[in-house]
Image (cartoon, rainbow, N blue to C red; front, top):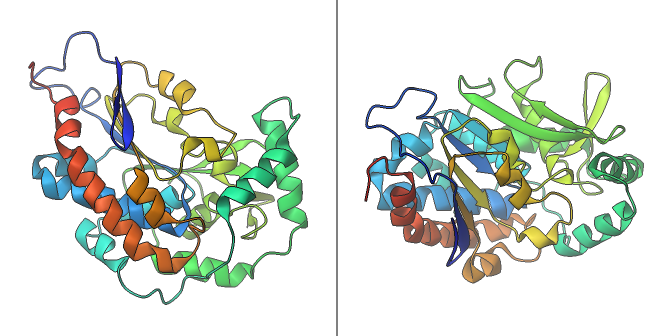
Length: 311
């Protein structure tokens, strides 16, 4: 059953028996899918989560204790922050403070996406598109790589990988293949987050081992299919899906099988707050406030969808 809601689309796929009152660990698993959206997207996602748990404290353990976290681009930062155990309220409130380490850049992200779409046009599959975008990214001369890594490190409350199943997406700039970084890889958390959010032509590709990686959003803004196996999934999507011509959230959701899935997308107020340049740190306060309002509006819907009780 699929139904439209203000600020998002709800997808419920569990038409069979509801979960038992005392489900086993596998069936009780929860996943967060945190999509790309620049600095504004980081703020908005933190705001949405804060609004959800403020309005429905009973959801806090499921959301903040999610067994699987899939982070792409902005979502990689949010995922690493949440998984560190840092208080959500503190993370959200930090978005209201003047940034000290973020690198500002002037870009219309929607225009950039259009240029990347033209660059990838005619590619026979998503990996071929990734290779074409990767070639452009490797030829570009974006911001200083060390300063960029310093900015990423400053966002993270902890430098070590968390104990939960954190999955951070990136794309190999030469092969176009998806790479999912986890704690099992011998990769610094900072480097994995930086690779996942290396916007082509804006931020430098990140060298890890013998490979160079760019933004995981080149494959998909959400990469929601990586949450397969969870019984409940929450997807946060700051930017309109149509702005990125690659990836298909509808197809990705099909890979989640019978999971109870809720997708929260930006409403008009959120999009206005995020702005045309989501990479501008000055947009963060408005974005986190808009996200917090929207999260509060969605709390009852999320609780109803994830409920283990029959109506």
